[in-house]
Image (cartoon, rainbow, N blue to C red; front, side, top):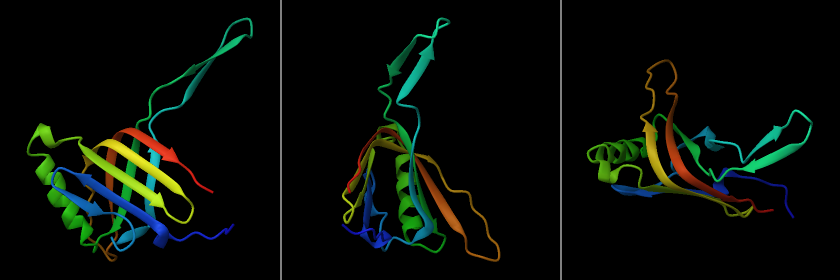
Length: 146
């Protein structure tokens, strides 16, 4: 077993109305990369006045995916065209799937029912900067390898 990691082994893609876009290696991903954040907790614990307790398992598998791209990445133009297309009709909204896999480690994350949450904040300054593309996902399923 190797304790080595490289973003070069990360394969990521966005597929939905208006296109299929590479979000992994060669997409101009910034150092901060891609993050997947659960929207809610798996459990709620309640403790009664007498000290007894109960756990409530939540079915919520929603989450938020943030893809950080260098401002100069051509992938920004592809995402911009896709979000503009999807904003033209509710029939195209929330129909994206994002898949992320680390082929060396065996991680596989599938995000279904994804919608563009917002377009990136823009700035022009001394350095080119990073654009953050944020998506809401109804269902995030993750299987971690190694």
